[in-house]
Image (cartoon, rainbow, N blue to C red; front, side, top):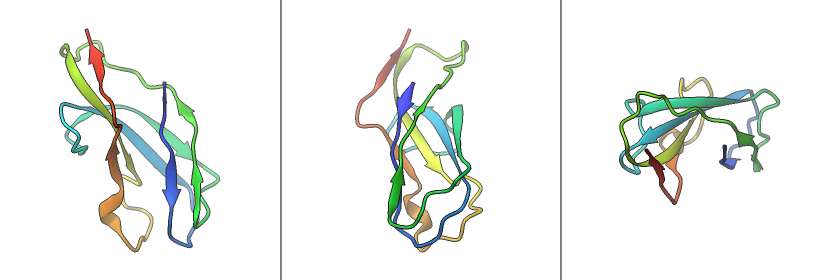
Length: 98
């Protein structure tokens, strides 16, 4: 389980998805291994944040190693934002897959 806070600096609020990934590096992209999602149906009001614990599943086929857990907010770019470049972020720490 992971808790990943989301901040909406814009004034708009709408339903948003957060996709979670495992990555060998801190640069989280769509090519990393998808491990789950969070659907914020109520949206996140402008200037506010949202945080919740999300259960993620590491695939059995995942190679052993050290990974970052990362998130991409609004992965389909459905929301019009002032800055589309700040939607991906990795956790500060890493996890070990055995």
